[in-house]
Image (cartoon, rainbow, N blue to C red; front, side, top):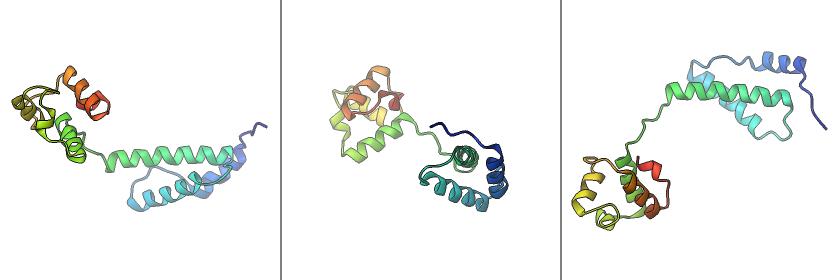
Length: 132
């Protein structure tokens, strides 16, 4: 059974919710609340799904503008992985180079080469692209 999109029902939903560009934290919280309700609603109608997608787009736009995450540097990612896995710099000697090279990489004084990124990816069982 194929459900058809009912424009009148969608218009009613839009007038009820009145979605617009999110400019305040209150508007953001309100949109999140509605989106969350729609996320867990069983058997959403096509109209509700369209409204949900619109709200998610508006929420993502607000979050990108107001909650932007700084992009981590490869050596910072390496430091985090090492810390969480209990890995010491000495453990990486021979994986990416001498103790001096490992120290320079971990401290961000030397960039990680593609071959070193691949070796680190294999060692930590993560994507090598994290280190490039």
